[in-house]
Image 1 (cartoon, rainbow, N blue to C red):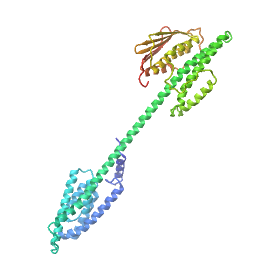
Image 2 (cartoon, rainbow, N blue to C red):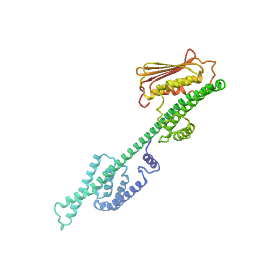
Image 3 (cartoon, one colour):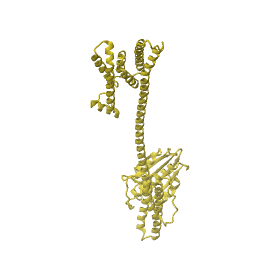
Length: 454
């Protein structure tokens, strides 16, 4: 645990020789007060030496030395008050008593000790004042104030010299403790706010990372599948362009349709980034994704301008997307590309959550995309099973047909990773791996209703 700034400053000042004073002005003030107390006691020592029958010089020196005790008021306030009470019968040390009582009341000394010493000082001052005034009244026979004058005056003077410094010291001490408490509370709140700010920054960073990952998955799902089919159709178009012009025309139309569909989905996703109110940043350069979305969406709009297609409903959330009812169309696209695909559905179809249906669609899409990339000419079986409380999917392909031409599609290895992340986020299970027959199989089981916030 580290020391506070005040403690470090106090330690530094003690190291420079300031003893127990925290500030230089405190030392100067105590020195001035001690000098005034010493001069007062020295002057009162003259009268004390006459009444005690001792040499005047001895009384002056005694008073001068006693007055300097006030210099210790911050370190030992109890000792200062006790000395002032002790010299009260000698009628000296009144400044020392007033300042000592104030310091004692303002310090951290227990209140019972403060009350005891204040009472002793009050009694000592009252007795000395009573004796002195009674002697003065007796020495002046022409002055007859009455029996109550001397005791009342002695009590008033004793209370007047004792109560104000004690009350002021109590007030200053309470105010000082309150300020220290508020300062400590402010420091604690500042530390808590700093911790909360750090946690908020961490959560924001995690949210940005998750959002970038989610956008990357959506972009991969759209681009990888559509472009893979376009490459396959383009290869088929190149092969039959001279032999079968009509088939080439159909393949060209399919390529155009798939390109428009890919651009439409890209425009929908980029529209989300374009309409984001905040500047969510991504990448090491700190470029706002919203700016990227505006530029990319403008490019997509320019690319699809003039095409005969259904207008895209851009700006929708990324959570919107294809579902299980569009699996037939997805399988048909692969069939049109020359793939042999069999779709098997078991159980009665029912409504699922949007996230579940979209994830199920993407799993099948990723399986078909992988077959286009790595197993050209292989037969594929897509299985969809509606079960109680869950939906199961499986995409299995046989070994690649050696006679089929490889489309030469690149692979980054991110598709299966993204699918596993999607399925796990919904509380499902995802398994993929080669089969004994030399093919490949990926399976997913999703709960009928995904977890909140998935």
